[in-house]
Image 1 (cartoon, rainbow over the protein chains, first blue to last red):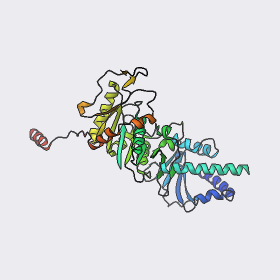
Image 2: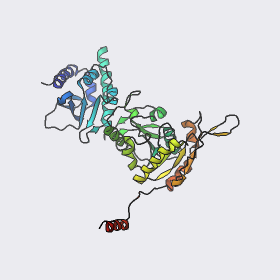
Image 3: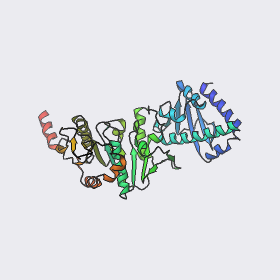
Image 4: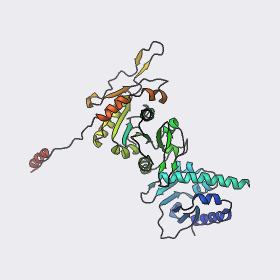
Length: 129
Length: 248
């Protein structure tokens, strides 16, 4: 099993653990669906489905509209809060590509930045409880 | 929607100040105006109009911020403040185009573009799509030689040129009002028939707010109605036939 899958497995288990506390966050994504391929160093990758704000593994035959590319260092430093998602995108550490054009997708970047801010606020709230 | 590029040959000539002032002056005159900060890696527009976050609509488009009646978008509103934009040139080109094509502009009369200086990736991507070009420069030979390349680019794409705004043309003495010329070199573009639509002073007060009220809108609109179009040189059919016979 590749390292990207190991990390995603861990993240999905954390997601399940906090699902009830973060229900408000999942509500924001109601009715929306996105497919994302997370690519690590050396091409190790997993295909994820974000549906109704909840992340699960997608089937291999589904085509992602966007591809998130970053190194495992960046991925972990964003999750740990050491690096800001917006900073990582600005500095080219994390790229959100439109799979049909293979170039950066600025609308998706803005959407992810806003979503990440909301998620961070929820995490802070959960921490306080 | 009329797309106007505000371009320069070199940096630091006051292009962003002019682009923002033009957009605000048009809005003040009753036009519906949008402003694109087309300088993806060196955006400055949010420094003047405000670093307001953009929204995303259900139709997957950016919702522009609005300041004094002008809708505006900039990578500076998406990227982190104070961090360099270190993107691949193909992404820079693509981002510049997306600012134009993936923004919910609605019904607008003029869309003003603040271009990066010279021939960055954004310029190469967007210049061929512009309806008009407004050149900003300062009266020095160094600047002129770079603007001449821009004029040639406009010829290559056959883009209509509105005119030249000559910034930092003189310094006005605060006590006697005498105008001191800073650069004594020939700086006009008359040989191309391109008019100078304004000569602006180098001044502490030349800020956007002052320029909005004094912007030469009448000359700008005159230039829109009567632009200079430099034709690309093409070899004529008769010349081709002549050449063919010579070869034979």
